Image 1 (tube, rainbow, N blue to C red):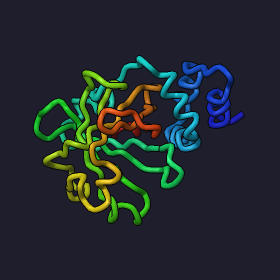
Image 2: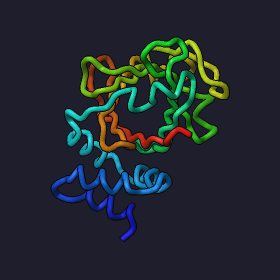
Image 3: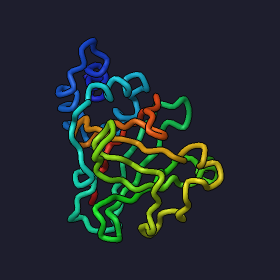
Length: 201
């Protein structure tokens, strides 16, 4: 049985064995981790969110401080929406020296970015909320790494309907995989997403 199929069967079992799934996921090579991530549907993402309650993750684990400021780290994403489900979140350590991450949403399609913008955010360790890291779209970074798109706030074009007032929260599934859930105005939304970290080089 290939690793992707085995991992997905673990997730589909009547009793979710998160440790067993995490072991298979982490033993997979980077490309297979992305394939597994992108094969997990919205219902299973909701299940993972519930199973990871109380799990620990921090911005330092996502993007190590010793990487230095404005060095991008890519997370391959899969969301629970019906369309445009594949994306990336790209993070870097803040260029200001603050203990926070700056980032944006990278879309593989050419259609979405001109319409909804890059969706910039600031990520911090969460003192409260349903997850351990908060991705805050109400805060916009003042700078960006070379090659990232121009910075716009989230009232840009149609982005106000997607990102305005939104804060996403993250929980850990395994060392390379995080589960997220969107909130708006303090209310948890039925929108989930997975982030698979690409090791920085």
